[in-house]
Image (cartoon, rainbow, N blue to C red):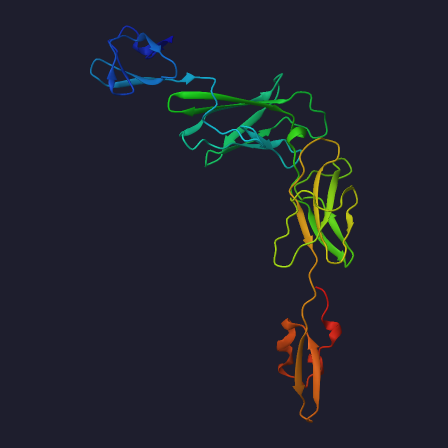
Length: 315
């Protein structure tokens, strides 16, 4: 139980002012300044009116408690999860609402612990995440102070406070890497387009593992206890026949998160279709053609359309 002072406004000092609680309960106390008692988590909206009954102002009293009930705590990410895909100074934080409470963000505050940092944050249209930008952040200098993020969540007349402290380098997580084929035995792994340059100053390290994808089943790089896994800085990765390659990346010098896996699966050889063509001279010729080239035999006498077995190769 706590006593809370309310004031309608300096301009109404000495006037006949009446008050209501939550628009439906008239208070006995009158005047520009009054005291109200707030019990536990029972906050309220207090409105003041002049002697003619015209609305003048209102004060919202919220009860702040130490419980954590408005958003959910997850084992992997905690209450609030923050991440960024590079060292550009921006970051995103998200959370999950408790389905039993109708909550929304009341206030956001972000700064470096010792001040001197200009950090702005905006709430997304769904109210489930924020995007922040530290306009004083420099990717080429050492982070001396952590970012101190505080978000106030409101449900009805209750406010819960959630705090998170971190360096940008703690939450950086690269986007997925690009994988392209070089030849039948190797692929090239490229840095994400969103990653900082030059790569010599912002190096990534790759984690590579080979998996065998069973026919008709989805390849899953995230499964534990898979075969050989190794780390490399090389952009060229060998590929064995009949195997798929999974690659992910992280900052080489920081103990931050790995990116999502990228999967490369070599194309399988297309089945050959044997087609018998009778030429005008009456002789029969047999061509082994790729299924997608079968239409090329519409004019079997054209030598340009006579497809040999060598034409059917891996894509």
